[in-house]
Image (tube, rainbow, N blue to C red):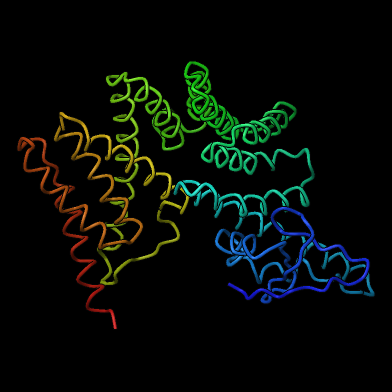
Length: 367
């Protein structure tokens, strides 16, 4: 992290903290365009997002140069706009990734940056702000700040209501967050209503058995689990597992077929379907939670345990963490010993072989 740089504010210039907008007293010594009220807020921002965008902020916040021609000015304005849009993309993706990891407090600075740049670029009433409102709402739900979460969701709901062309994906995400809010309040019937709407709107885009709907099923399962309605919860957890297992199996098959034609540790192909960082984090969040629930159950059903372990093994394989893939693969092989012969999958054997090959190749090529 950049060192604290005490400020002596120039006369008439009001410098504000990046996080709380209080009067700023210190400056980031790397970019020199970001200010904080104290070292705690500087550390919080650095941990969340500033380390990744420090240098990107310089051309955005630097003094606008004097340009002679209209053509130069138009080009400069367009370049500035593109830089701000890039910052929106970086900060939003990072905030979402951290959110899936469950680090709710660290989400806030990154999402606050995303919201600030989104307002600057698109205006206060644009639907482009809704995804960031939803990230901030979910982070505050996780922190127990329900009044603040409700405020963000109110902004998001009003914007969606006024925007006729709003996509069903955004509507699904809005309903998911409303479901999470009411779940946090203990109002389970309302929560299930909103989560079922999440699944409905997600289904209109990708179908009911797509990874976009899996989150709605997962959170509904959590509610039934909390109500001790284990049969329904178990059925929904199985649905989530099946959706991700099917999706990951397709990706793994494609990667194995592609990389089998190369001796490299991994073969990147622009046409090869893959998981992005947020999908990877979301899958890990859900599959880990379901594994823990299955592991703690008094009656551990080997077939269900095998499927969730297979999913986690494939997930780490696709994220190129071959050591963890191997670790989960060993657990998978152990549980498959309890399955009838006709329920054992050849794809598991192929996956384990590829993990071991990747590990050995990586060890050989490592300096």
